[in-house]
Image 1 (cartoon, helix red, strand yellow):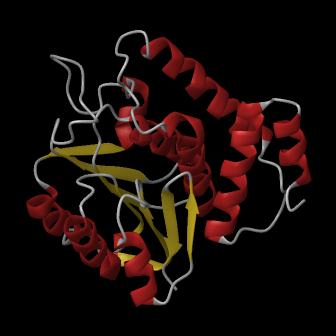
Image 2 (image 1 turned 90 degrees about the horizontal axis):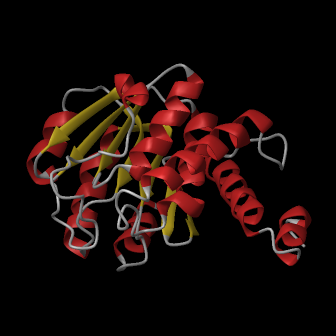
Length: 233
C-alpha cells in the first residue's frame, strides 16, 4: 500500500517495471528528494537503452553480472547519481564494469561530474572478467570521457586518490567483501565525503560491516536487494 503503482505492476507480472519503481523509490529516499513518485521519462529511456546494450553484451560473456547489478541496483545507482548530481563519484571494485556503466550514463545525462574507479582484476572469484579483457570492458568508448580507471589494490590506491580531492559526493564499495576490509574502506572514505553525500555498499548483507558502521555514525541506512545506502549528515 505504500507504493500502490509498484504493487499493481508486480501483481500484473510486469517485473521489470516493478524493479524500476523500487529503484526510483529508494533513490529518492536515500537523497531525500521531493517530487514525483514516478521516475522521469527521460531516465526510463536511458535505462531502457542500457538494458538493450547489456543484453547484446551478455552474449559475449555469460558471467558479466554475477551480482545482478543490471536489474535493480544499476537503476538505483543511476537514479541516485541523477538526483544528487555529484561532481565526483569514487568506487572500488569494477570487474566487467556494470556499476561503472550505470554511473557513467547518469553523469553523461547530467552533463557534469566524473567517476574514479579502483580495481584489482579478478581478485573476486565470483566476478571474473573474460579472458583477454580488461577491467570495465563492458563500458563503451562513448561513456569513457568522464572515467578515471586505476588498477591496483584499494589498500594502496584509495588513500592516494582521496588525498587528491577536497571532497567527494558519492563513495561506493564493491571490492573485497570481508568485514575488516569493508570497515576499512568505509572509515577511510567517510571523512572525505561531503555533507549530504552518500556512502554506498554492494553486498552490504555479506557481513555486519555496513550495519555496524552506520550504527557507529548514527546514520539511518537503506537496504535494497543487498545494496546499502547511507547519507552523511
